[in-house]
Image 1 (cartoon, rainbow, N blue to C red):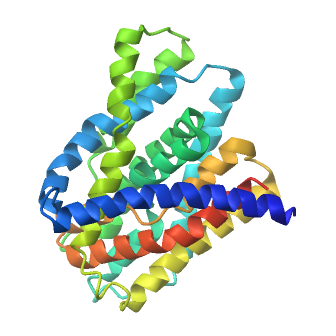
Image 2 (spheres, rainbow, N blue to C red):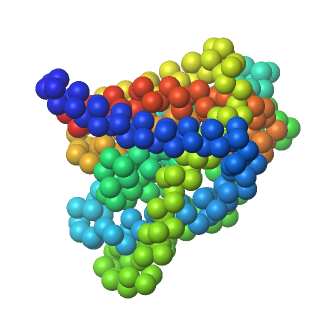
Length: 316
């Protein structure tokens, strides 16, 4: 291994992570000053979820030229996303098994599901450009499939009745719809006029700053004075941002299935911190949203140290 090259790549990735977290810091301060509060951020969540992030995904299809190589890459990226989630499920099996502790399902969910849309997607865009967004969009589809099936079951464990999922929500969610819209333009090589592509691109460009500002408001209200005292959160971080990406890296290196930018994009997803969905699902299924928020905030903080290393490893 060329250590100097590894260090250079690590510094580049670290710079991108720090840039994103500087925006998080602005959101944190804005919440403290009452300029942009968590309440406002939650109201803006639907805008991000239903409009802005889909525009990012659609734009990635409109700006990527179709070829056998790119179509194969999309399928391989989806495979990488599936492997990531399966690893999370398997590696978290020994932990948080006592359902009498109602917080354990929150911790286990946080071990499995990463911040695909709000962390991995912006970072992939920063490191790899539109190619990274294109590959990450495949991972987001896989994320939606897993969260609305296994994720619903997981978060609802211990509640009265069995965890169920709605097939309509599985198919009719913004991530999948965005791919359904963008994919035909990609496959059929349809040239879309600038009067259409420019608004889509402009709206999509809000994804990174708004997502990071919102995360800052969540962190501001998570009780940072006690955020480092919960031992379960350290275990979640160990599984989610260390064990899962290391195992993913080892499997891909041994099999050689993923290489180049595709490998980097999938590793960004594999090493992403716990998903913001942890908080939303906790609220929906009667779990402690305070515990969920602190867990997401803690693992997100820790990922500042781990993600650059994991990303740099794929570029050596």
